[in-house]
Length: 102
Image (tube, rainbow, N blue to C red; front, side, top):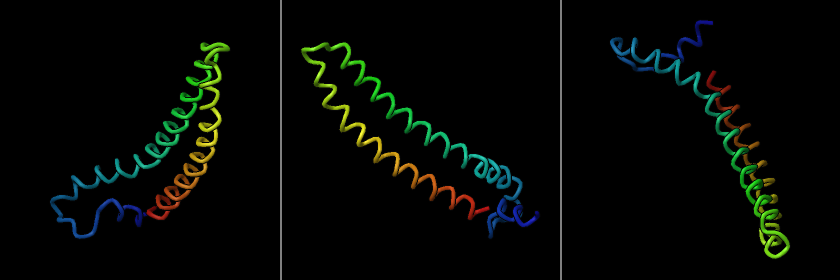
């Protein structure tokens, strides 16, 4: 209800700044879920891109040096699993913080 509108006007804001602060706070509130989604998408895309490049190098290298990118693929997979857990934690914490502000 109207309690949410109180979030749009920070405490101690002079009356003459209220028309400027309300649109800024609305954009801030709407940008939070967008930035959360973009952050998650960018991190997932970056990890997959690295794996695609390593697989491409493995196929292009043939039998002579094709094993070298394969040797890097396994640690990158392990790193991807670790990053996935970190991303899940960050996503959960930020979602809780954003919901706590609402």
